[in-house]
Length: 313
Length: 260
Image 1: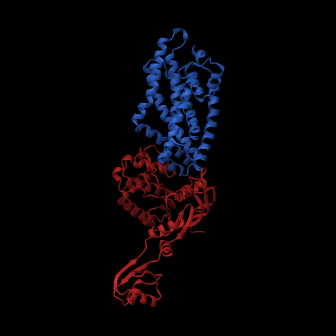
Image 2: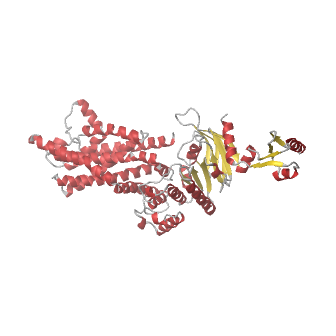
Image 3: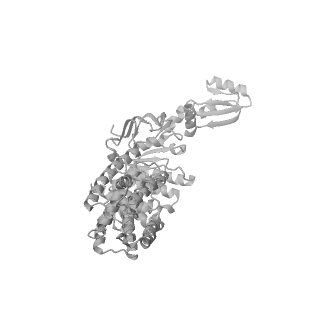
């Protein structure tokens, strides 16, 4: 398929010393330019999957293709076409921000080797300064990375991974260990990057609000696919929106609900499942005096918790 | 190809840059050579009967020089484990370069680090009166380089069998200290009982040390009392074993990294 950038078929990974596979026969595709989120609790197999997709771990079985290259036979070509932000920061803390970027640019073969920044090509120097401006570290670029905050380090890693213009950017729990403000900030930055470079983003996370914005979400648990779809569809499939009503005259309200053939539970308050019906329409047609009204609109988080709970039964 | 060479230089330069930034490490690397040559060598020389036929201080100097180059490169290579624990290795291992380039870059970088230390040892030798002519130093350079590269390949083989930095810190002394004595860094090993003789000649470091001495003592009357093998024999052994260590070590290392 032309617009498929990641193709995974029956992927299995069994670690040498493990009894059960960490990834147990999962299949999915990711489209070019898609924002794809892989979600699951700790130990679900997210990092294992992303490690295989990024060529650092070999699979046990299955077919994996990235940008139409086979993961076994054409690993080098895949490495050129992807960028990765690891779960644990992979910067060299003893080097400066610029040296970290230069290291990356050189091992990706983007520029000829020169032993110092001032001797590197003008094109490189211009690019680095531009990137430093984007993430707001222009004045800190010659400082060792160990003096950077967690959020700054993450941004530096993202900038570094974009310097070779990858087709797919893998992010393995990129915001873990960051405070909420840095997380929000980083997330905004990533969205900007995505709009600007039209990069496919493959994200693993256990922060659900980060997956709410994804085009599609794949939820795995214990190495198996639980569900795959748009966040809206997953929510709809799993938890129906409902309204909760109560009235002084409960019997009257009940007979009204019965007359409208609504699906409800409880004896007052009544929880009415919407099943795709419009809440406003229902409320409008009720004549009884209401004493309580609440609309329950589930978040992806509720759907997720429900799914994982189901899987563990 | 140019890409691979760029990558090798880049990886090598990183190691060297790190050495220059780490003053404590520079200092620490000189302490042992200075103790061995300055105290052990000098005190033995002052107390041994003068009729052994050669200067013990010079003997220890040549031994410690080769041993430091060999060992420092080997332990530097093992810093790949540290990278793995700091997760910097992920950055290297997902890059589109040959796994051999990674290892060669690492060996080259650690060789540069060790040769810098070698310069310090030579300066110290001159200070305490080890006879060193410019001509001799030029000839010792390739022998030093070989000691480094050999140590690097040895380091890869050790590394490929280790899981963590902790394991490395625990195991490394066990495989390096016996070599100090079996390679005759500060003890003469010209004649040994058969059992020790076999062990001694099985140690990689023996050849690095003996090559250095072969070059230093070439054309000198002490040569027959000290040097074990010819320069060409040592060179041959080092070259062959170097290739075996490098290829086997790299293959094992890559395999262990990927097939968890």
